[in-house]
Image 1 (cartoon, rainbow, N blue to C red):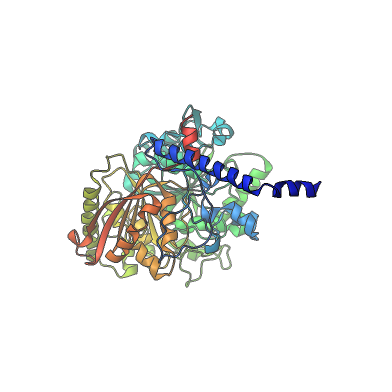
Image 2 (image 1 turned 90 degrees about the horizontal axis):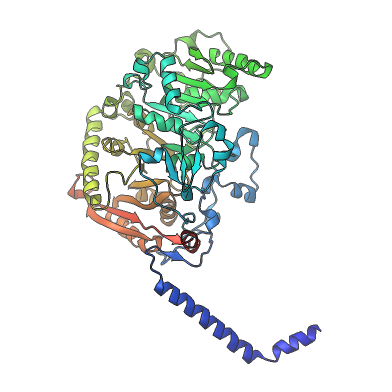
Length: 598
């Protein structure tokens, strides 16, 4: 029978060939007619491919493939599939599987991340605080799982955020006012006359706590891992609220010492007693002198044996850390950190946890392991009895004391501010025809230096993620001392955020840095496309030769050049510099078109 079948097939090769050619011609003709007749202005990809490997920056690709729809929420360095595939040996009890694990160059997806089916341009701030398009983040399990806590509610095409949380069902605004009342702040205002500006919210959920702080001129870094409540940080950023994917695991948080006036944990499900209290000591490192830790959790009020045990041990630990209870009411306790080293120096010898060694740099954070020790204050902070920062908003433009760590003078600081005010004014003139007052909300400065780019945006309703490269001066502490937010990062790797989370990327000399480090320019461009929203903007300021080379990639990335100018026209910095402003097109895959047309 097998021979008969083979003989019959072999007996008509000419007929089979003609049939195959006819079929191919018909299919090709139909595809051609469809593409000619399509009235959509979006780019439609009828075929897609997944490719791995590293692009050669010396060869500009004519096209860059589009990733499979299943990768529409890919976070390359927080990809659990990568962990499974590479069989990394990680300690799950230490949350190592939620820390960054980046793919090797040969395992990277060199493709553009597609939007999900039905994707729409995000709702504008401030309306976005309370509602987002369901199609943009098509995950509703939190609405069901947290239905009794008012996290979020599905209403037709939108997901609505009533402002509730695990510990504040009646609303974040009332909860925030109650915290201010517990601390006897004037008028129950959490900003305490501008003295409280930077907040760290760990285990933040969908960041309603941080979202409602903004109206009080308080800005929070909302942090959560990509865990069983996946997409919570994606919801936060879609809402226009500052947020970052991260975890209290084994590595230091990517923030310098003394960055926050207040840390907050509302049933954040963290075991603060593990490993000699190392996680609580990490909070201590990033809190400013006199900073607060607001802890709303069953251990603070419950009466069962296990909760009482945890409370006793935690109380003993923070007492040895020289923290004191500032207030305790109902289900919340607030501890306060000392202003000076006096308490540390009065402890009995061999008291645990110990003080960190004098050669430990508390501001070194990139890839640095947490340490189970107390970070003592510098002599300057000890004598000043605090950080000696101006109240907000004066601290944004006042030279901070830690400038001396870089041998920067007040005059240098003020000059930097003047230069960036001119440059930002020039940028907005170039963007003027393309944007409205509410077009831009989430901004990233990819090489923030002292944070003056962000400071120059103070009169616009935006927030800025200030990124300081890991191999340069650690100026992130200056940025936090100015009342701004940011993180450390290596741009040879993917950033810890979801796709489509920023409206504007500012890339000042970042490509020069990448080339100097011998990393891939093409990889960085694909990463910038991943984190940029459709219709979002990129401002590239770099050497003229580099800007010209970047322009060659625009067709493959589906980016449009909005305008190009010579940097020396508005600044005395870098006579060979040029500015290129780019806008990302709104494009859809064939699957997105199919769903949108239903």
